[in-house]
Image (tube, rainbow, N blue to C red; front, side, top):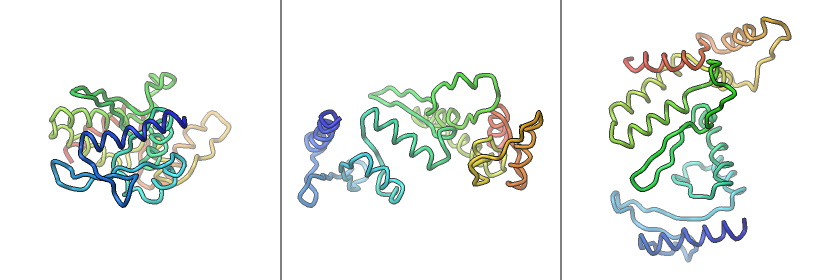
Length: 211
């Protein structure tokens, strides 16, 4: 990792200098250049991964774009997803020159297929990014509105309900009605909430687009 990540760091600075005319900032190694569209300053800097995971929690506003390699990228993306609701709601995209592939951050999750249990928010918001990428901003805005209004209306999947209730996990009772008691417990902790499955959340998003 010392050699691969060291080379990646060196290449990043070289690219900023050769392609964008970046200049050293405060004696280096950080560099900066002007955004050709907005004329705002862009600062390119490097941070060791473990230190970055601390900094992104304490000073998230200091970072807009993160460039890293695959292994640390996996750690960082899941950790940052937890800050905004978890991988169930975090969208994902792979964008190259003229091509974009959009997908749920958590992958296919085949173990949950057909069970109507998981949060479809990651896939829905990935679709929103895809629509915005191809210029369909009105449709993308409708999806954002639908998701925001659904959560505001407290129509929540299990993972979102846990976050809203600010608990790690309710105590499931060891009897056939355990699932119902868990649902009842969450709904008591979140007055006015309705727990929904995958399909229910998707239908709620569509319904709340017109709110």
